[in-house]
Length: 465
Ligand SMILES: *Cc1c(COP(=O)(O)O)cnc(C)c1O
Image 1 (cartoon, protein in one colour):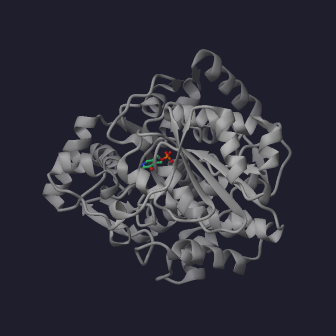
Image 2: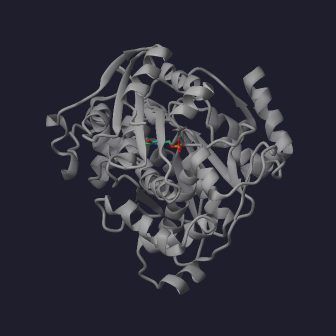
């Protein structure tokens, strides 16, 4: 298995290069040259009817990584990655009513679906680096969820150090504590006196300084890394196989950077029968507007109750565009050049009709988000977080026009966003047992000005190499 760039101007590479580099040299995102094929019957034949999530993950991921490791190595990494999950079967399915199901993706150490990808990516990084006796420094910016999931994935690992920049005073207390209370010699939290965009600009500037980034062997774990999408493909197969033996299902996904739902699309390309993909947006509705009009038009980001979806540019959307354009990298490059200069891109009528055959969308505002949390709590005695609510509201609005079951993805545990959940339902969601003492734990972080030189000096001083 080799990988190509969505911009078509980089050489084909192996999984190891994809994992460690993230972005392709031509600025594109990596995708496999072809999609490995599976069927539900074939997987059941190999694994038996009551297989575990881990066994399924090893089977599905194997063709993507076979150039870089043995299958038993992968099995061991998968085993370790998901040992930290509090649900035995990793992703439990919950039946809500009639055709509507929820896949709970939030049983990892930081209570958001990002753990499912990052726990495995941490293992893959360590495996690859130890094999080559290399060391890397991961530097990332976060507005909340990604930072804690990345820290949990990298903590206590020999081959890496991780520096996470978050905007000082601008993350929720749960999110901050999940990052700053981790006691590990290779984890460094930096609170920047600025916004999330300032943090992201600092990371970009440090990457662009080749002398600095080479000196610390700088790397990233952001959501454009193919390995993250790859790990997420598994639960689309898993969820579908839990809900039905044969027929197709629909998936509804609260979306921001488009990485999660693109993993679903990848599962479909690999042979999983899916009728429709339903994209759920909050009021930052760039994706909903695209799936309705065929035009992607950038606007300012407004804060909502579902902050992990407060996004203007959905980076993984580039992967879908590459498929829509028949894997023509020059067309993708041209489209993104337009998006940069004109703040909009358009795919044209014919492409739009084809896209709409598979993709539906809807946007959900803050008011509807709170109403959905409250209604689901009242009617089904089940607490959901605001992101999950955006998804469920969207799924319910398509119930009458779709025949097959709808699986709506629950992307965070309600206790990760206690204020919105309490405001909506009157119930304070309690933290799961492994985090119940989060508010008593000691925190450690460094407050630094929004100044590239100061941040670089801090990283050099604290880095072990
Ligand atoms: C990151 C995140 C999302 C958005 O997922 P994408 O892959 O960026 O589309 C949705 N919900 C939660 C809770 C998240 O942390």
